[in-house]
Length: 203
Image (cartoon, rainbow, N blue to C red; front, side, top):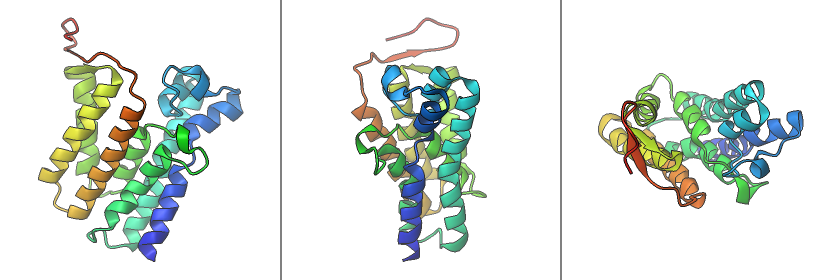
């Protein structure tokens, strides 16, 4: 029952789409209508509602993943297999919110929040940050669709090798599966490309 409670709390927390709600009610901007990809996320909040609203959206998107996982980890056994579902619940809520099921987000910021909630287990969030920085700054994968898919795929593989807690590993795989699934659901036929910061784009 405790596991179920935190799964429900995590899902409901994830279902609050701050990247959609803050621009809509503070700036009267619907990011799902004015953006190219229709994603109710942090990036579109920055682009279409401005930096202050974007920062607030980012912090709240991180927080809605961090808070339920952080507190669940204090009262549950993080080594029991079902703890992976607690980790995945906020991400699933963001991707498929109960009140806006067809228009959930890509769940990147909330995924970082979930992994931050595992503290003092820092390896998962550092791995995800490493791959995002690698493919954004060093070996630049374009467009963002491919960058995210490759990042979360490699993140899952490395977690299986480097993280000892199998429940956390299963949670990382589950949340990665949700993120990749949502990216494919919003795939717009973009052309894959790789480049270095010092060379032209290779496609």
